[in-house]
Length: 208
Image 1 (cartoon, rainbow, N blue to C red):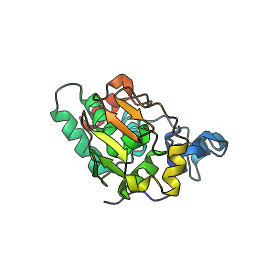
Image 2: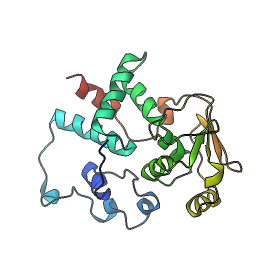
Image 3: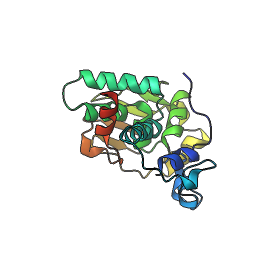
Image 4: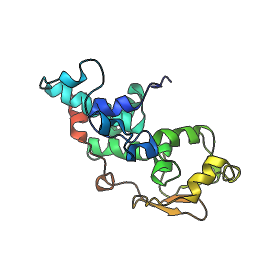
């Protein structure tokens, strides 16, 4: 599946907020949003036209896609699946995205950003219930144990991450820093997702 390989800082500038796609760099003065808080491109500073209702909905969808690193076709698949489930469609959608293995790895602190988590998963550095899983879109379930593969703990990057592991994961998962494992103890609730997302706008867009 094709994916975006260009400069990710311009994605943050286009959405007008930090998407935290560059890990630690996003917390320094080098962050593109802090230095150039306007849209990229030749006319980025002069865009003053009021967005349409559709434009607002589109930007919200694009923002969420870029936060989780999901392509359009896959994102639509998540929406269709959320629409078939019981409950509020927008919350179902966010719950599915949160359950992605790359997001879980990031939330547990085993990576500094979701893009890095995706890369580490693809390279086979993590296991689910003791079995190696290299699919970033793998959906975890209650009771699953996500851990760093034993052979990967000695790699320079994983040693660096594990030595400074200080992230507090959301309440729907627990972290055992000594064992470098995390357990899914519940499905995420809407209040567990602290991202500035207005999911009803996405539902409105796809319901047009």
